[in-house]
Image (tube, rainbow, N blue to C red; front, side, top):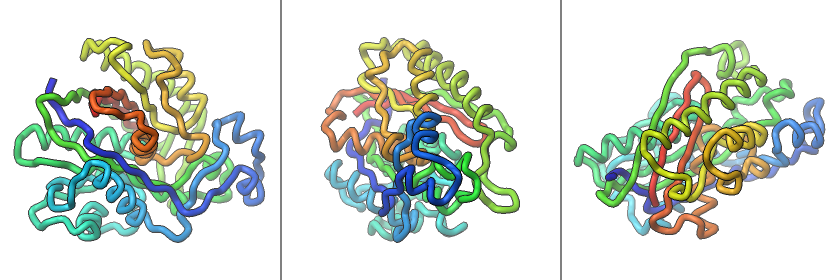
Length: 309
């Protein structure tokens, strides 16, 4: 099955580590409570970096890993809902920072925590048409800029960072996906009087642990890809309990699920992309590997994909 395949990955974190004990000095919480409820031990906060800075760092790392130059990239997709500025798009500004050519398509995608999945789906469709050669897909979020530091239910969850992949369309590739949207802006979103992230935790949990296993199982059935053919599963790193619950409801053993939420917190559209960057750095993404990724987020949106290295 032809499709986009990953040529290289990269990632970037915020410049300051904030532990749970640090959070307990800001808001009424504790390390024990955060670990028990979420699995998070720390997160990275971008004090001296913009969202664009992190996207650039992740992109340069991915391009170096792939062995490509900016001139070889003709599609840049940035997945984020925390742009530094409303316009120009982060993708447009990133193209300038990287020194890309003028004959390049740049666009931002705002699908919250499902964003990176949606970005890959978009890139696969565009590259399949033959008008583009190589794409740079980035998930980047500076969630600290949208956090309400008086809301202990949400502020402890989020971190800043970016992940990026370089991909190309190949007859030897493999890409398949599913996705959906259930419009509801009361459960999870960003806005209101404070312009901050808000969330109904129990409802998000119920949504995720029902919809994500369903999405994964339907994708497996659609592709007829057996459990042994998938090397790793990456869920959006929202909550350790959600990931563990999903693992119990799908055909893949728990050891195939890659997790980093304990170190990064929830980085929204960046989370799956950062996981890929970390895995590449650790030598886990050797050529031929198939990775199943699944995300969910505000909207409510969800999506899963299988992609090949």
